[in-house]
Image (cartoon, rainbow, N blue to C red; front, side):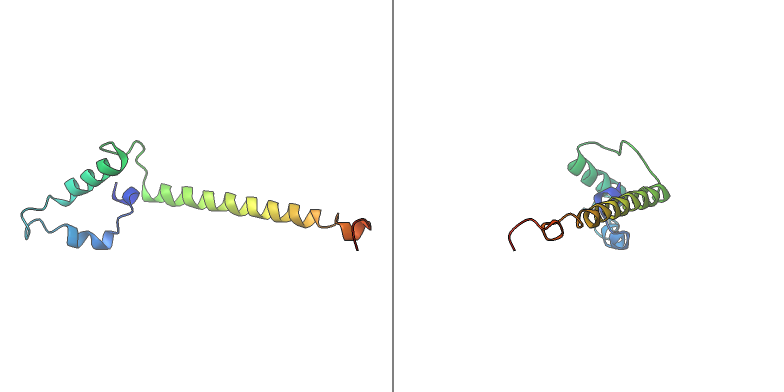
Length: 91
């Protein structure tokens, strides 16, 4: 849940000090409250491991790179048909 909220694990030490500050809720409850406030439900619908998230992100990036490469190839292919090459248009 904390990953989906974009929380930094290095900052958990400052959030997990309910022993020093008794008014604070424990870290797990704090994350659950934040998650419910942001997403409207108490837990994620699909729980995925860090490895699965990284693999999905890599796949998304590769697809984006492929789309960019295809668009670049289409644009360079269309450059041959311009007004200067066909002789038409204002000179």
